[in-house]
Length: 171
Image 1 (tube, rainbow, N blue to C red):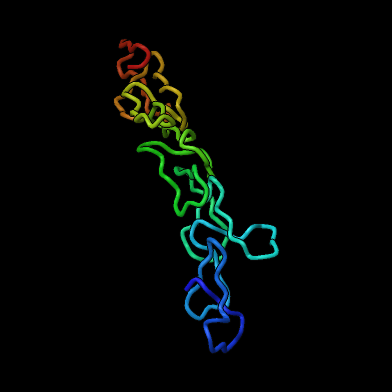
Image 2 (cartoon, rainbow, N blue to C red; image 1 turned 45 degrees about the vertical axis):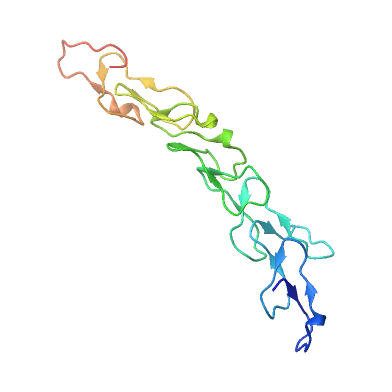
């Protein structure tokens, strides 16, 4: 392993060639392939040199397949990763291919500074938050109330049942 030969039926290991850096082969292979965390460059070079996956990408298998963008909710802040790192609990990213932990934001219904790895906390009853991000929760309007924890839309805010009752904003 780690060597290859393009000579069919070779009778000696001396005809085998070492794989390039960041490449591997299996016994009896006629070519080397990229190690996990590495891919062939988009523009082929004179030799099949494997290059590290860029930030925002990973590759967890052996082969010449291209690196895969990190999924929403994950990031890769280093080159050559074999898996993406997860955002903290109740946090996500707003796009794929994210390169920094600072791009993690609290999910809808939660608020906080996930990008500093501070915990995201649920929007309290009487509030809601529609989008992911570090913004605060929005208070229900005057005359409306909610008993829902981590509400994600204004529909959690209900009108007061008694026409003579009054509810301050955010209750």
